[in-house]
Length: 224
Image (cartoon, rainbow, N blue to C red):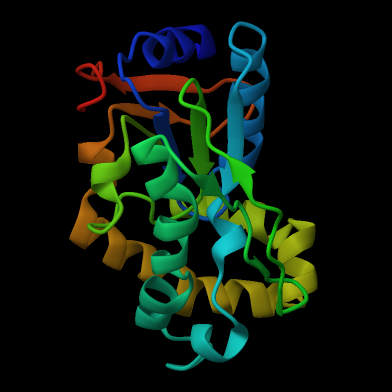
């Protein structure tokens, strides 16, 4: 399956870098899938950069300014999109200058600005994370991949995920937060951006080890 996606990425014709997003709800398996795709892509193309939107979180005061259980707050205030665009997406889209792939350490709630690196014209950027097809980001992508997993499955994954235990707490606290903040926030995103419909590739990732492509629309030379 990944070979088909790699073929699609390599067939995109641009004079500037190719930008790929891996989108999906919390617990859809984006990080694992993105790492696997990146590693396999690097076996045939050297200059692949993998980044996560989680490195562009806002600080805790901004994220929770509407309340820890606010679904609107989750969707609107979780990430610093202006910094994501100016420091990462725009340099790659233009194919010039330098980029920064991290500005914040969400676990320690501290600024964490990575070393600036030069953008190479002959490169592929893969960004994984939630909300990547929202309006202010949608025009950056040459290929949009959406991992489709139902909320019941992702909730069970998050209950057992170590990062959620460390950030949120006990099982019942995780379930409450997901039902009041994270799931409704994702539904707001679905309503505004319709990411599954607008993705080039939709993958049923209910089984990490058996991802299945359920929709495929080839990009048009970098203009999906």
